[in-house]
Image 1 (cartoon, protein in one colour):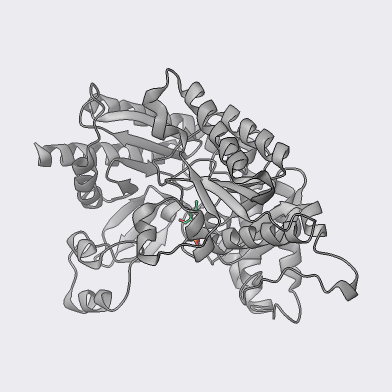
Image 2 (cartoon, rainbow, N blue to C red):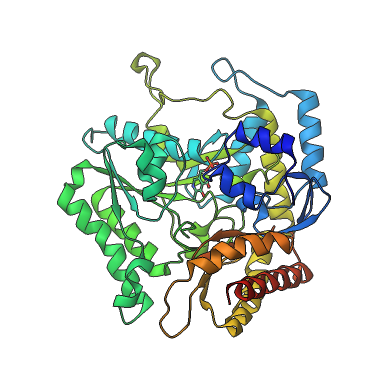
Length: 446
Ligand SMILES: Cc1ncc(COP(=O)(O)O)c(C=O)c1O
């Protein structure tokens, strides 16, 4: 699409997330309508939303049941004052979310997005240890390539160098290890590589002093490193390490939650229960800002005591637990559970993998990975040397939009995550648009 002068001027007066405005000017997208799996730009051109709005529109855009839940709640109560009361629908949401999380994770605190959920998990864990006899436990170990949010704590846990440099110094107490894909070519098998990488968490804990380490934070499937998908054993080892040293295992499920990987949460897909899950994105299907921290119930109980103790979680947000957001969240859960969309994501995800594997015919795909309807494709210059091909990804950003396709493209990989309401014909359409966009990009580079 072309940018008119007015929009160009307005874009110069605002910020786009994590991207340069002049780069955006080269392939702009200004959207003014969305329905199901499609967007329309201001010129009326249709785009296939191959990334569920950025892992958000789990039920597609403008889902009628969500619109109805929103309308009803707005007409009843649209705000409750968090320091003076709580809305009844917020309690309903607490109950409903706890029904779909792994057993034992029943302590729910709703927020307005992913960064808030992660920030809260960090503060909650630190305060928990301070008031349960381990005041020196304050460090967190996470991974390079990981992304946990834009606020200072979540950013410190993130391992995305250039996104963090402008804001140095970072918060102290955050350590990193490498995710398995970083070393994969140095091991004879993916399983062995995963075992090695999982054990590096223990090495760091031991060298830091276990009595100073509070938590491990990981995305079960890491987006920013290119849909890094560890083995089940990787998570089992992490669980054992956390149990051994009394360290909280925190899963950032802001992308992987809400049915995306074939279960309600990736914790269930991988069969490993963390101590805390952070939710966001798909939890409201993008209708309203919503996130949540879900912790072990006994951790929550450490914050109760006699009134004289004055113990409370010293944390809050004005819009946390907003009634409208909670009403929509309940409707999203009801729809996913009611239609079994998590299980459907597993089956349809197999079909999506099959189709994406066909892209290997083009000679520039190293690997298709992911679980359920969260898939990543790694691009290479040729499949003999496996050398990265960032120019292809850069060109693909342009050809995808020309072909009416919105997906997440990092120069060396791209990710797809269609809405869970997609069907087989949507997957075919998505595949055709990806293939055409890749072929066009390769033509342009030849
Ligand atoms: C894995 C992960 N964690 C946390 C966040 C932060 O969520 P939000 O942008 O809603 O604050 C994101 C956002 O992209 C994410 O992908």
